[in-house]
Structures are given as structure tokens and as C-alpha cells.
Amino acid sequence: MIRKTLVIAFTILFAVVLYAKDDKTVKLTGYLLDNNCSAGKENDKNFAEESAKHPTSCAKMESCEKAGYAVYADKKLYKLDEAGNTMAAEVLKNTKAAKGVKVAVEGTVDGDTIKVTKLTEVTG
Image 1 (cartoon, rainbow, N blue to C red):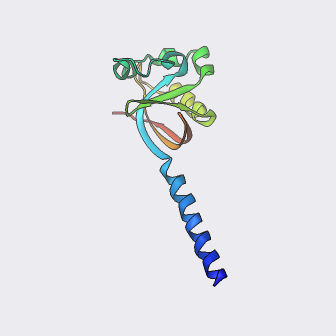
Image 2: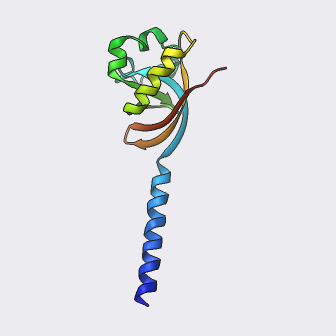
């Protein structure tokens, strides 16, 4: 009887942990911005418009690359982790867009940061 109870308890605990972990997994599409230009502007009235017009040349500047990157999607700014910053720099290096680099991001949310597993440019 005790053995059955323990098995059931561990099964429920395992299911809860898996369920909680999946809740944080996200797939977003938004605009890639450097943290220098996006810091503190998330709640600005025209931020969505400004994000779509952000110059690629600005995001490629050395100081902006060092500051790291974020994605503005669904009216929220998500900072990228180190892996995401590396992927973002690569996207910016290869993009043909002069402004408003749109990206698809997959990963898990931890506070206001995404631990990125995949980041690709959305064209068209």
C-alpha cells in the first residue's frame, strides 16, 4: 500500500514539474533591437512603430552588440541570453534588411529574458 502511494505521488510530482516547465516555453515573432536603443522605452506610445524602423546599422555597432539584444514581440520586450545574443549578431551580420529586422525566437522565458534555443530571421 505504501509503495503504491509513493509511486502515485512521484508520478504526480513528475507530471507537475513537466507541466510547469512547458508553460515557460515560447515561440515569438518580433523585431530585433539592441539593448542600448530599447532600454526603458518598452512602454513608449510609439515603441512598436520604432521597433519596426530600427536601423540595422545601429544594431551592428560595436557598442550595441556589446550591450546585447532583445526582441519586441506581443507588446513586450524580451532580452536575449548569451546564446541568443550570439545568434542575433549572426542574423544581423547576414541580413539584407536596412531596418526592422524581424525574427522568430524559440526558447524558455526566465523573468524578462529568453534562454534562446533558436533564432532565425523572418523574411517576406
